[in-house]
Structures are given as structure tokens and as C-alpha cells.
Image (cartoon, rainbow, N blue to C red):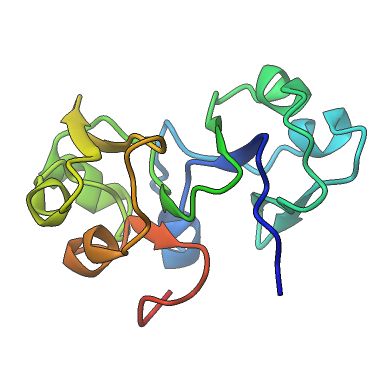
Length: 159
């Protein structure tokens, strides 16, 4: 049985869709795989997976050093118990975002409409989840047409 993490933890707001697509074009607001966050983390909680930084929540203390080191500013901090995350930081309009990354949030608002708790706001063409309000039901991840919302528990099919 896993325990809930009560302190804030880091996560990388990039789903690596543009990197996985193998295209030359990349989101200007995504992880570039430079490793600055890996080097900055004193707890060994971050590693590069397929060129994208990923955080081991069990090892993360929420110290913030990785976020300060990231030149792209794609590392955010959420309550450790928050299981549903928007893994996209792109603020481009839908058509532009989709050309760069197949898993980009396009700001369509489908997730916000399906959220029974009202935990999702769409600002600057990207969804944001309020962890204090989110009930981790996963309805937003199911509703997201592009897979930009990730259920880290793996309970939503395809994630």
C-alpha cells in the first residue's frame, strides 16, 4: 500500500509529445532535456527518460532547486497527493500547438467541462488544475482529446 505524500513535489509540465513524434519542430515551452534539473537535484529524484526530465515523487522533497535550474521553466510544484497533472506548458493557440506536439493542450476546455469538482481553469490556451480542489477522479484525463492530462496512477486507460 502506498502512502500519500503531503509536501509539495516537482513535476515536469511536458508530455514529450513533440520529442516522441520525431519532428524537427519542438515546442518552445517544453523540456529540452538539458539535464540542468538532474544536476541541481540533491536527492537524485530526477532523471532524463527519452530526453525528457521525469521526477520520482517518492524521492522529491520539494526543495525547488530543480525548478530554479530549469531554463525552460517547465518544472512546477504540486501537492504530493495530487494524482492528475496537465503535462503541457504550451500557451500557443490550438492549431499551432498541435503542429508542434500531438499531446499538446490546446485549451479546448473539454477537461474543465467534465470536471465534477470545478478544479480546472483554462488560461492562456492551457488547462491548469487546482490540486486543493481536485478529487482525482480522472474524468478530465478521459475527456482530454489529446492526452495532455496525465493520471499518474495509471488508472485512466492509455496512460
